[in-house]
Length: 103
Image (tube, rainbow, N blue to C red):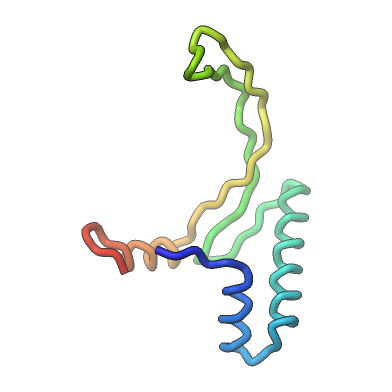
C-alpha cells in the first residue's frame, strides 16, 4: 500500500488530460478551497457515487489519561468533518481488496 500525494495526483491527471501540471494544481487547489469553504459554512458537499463530505458535532465527553485514570478530563463538543462513501467508491474498494487479497 502506498501514499498518494497531491503532487502524485497532479502528475497523473496532467498526463491523462493533457493540461499542464500548473493548471491541474490550480484546479485541485481551487477544488479543495471550495470544499473547505462550503463545509465551513455548514453545507454538505456531494460527489454522486463517490461520496459526501459533511460536518457534524461531536458531543462533549469525559476522557481519561491512561497513565492516571483517576483524573477525568473534560473534552468539549467540537465540529468535525465526516466523509461517507458513495456506492461506486464503496464497490470499487471492496472488489479491489476482498478478504485475503490485496490488489
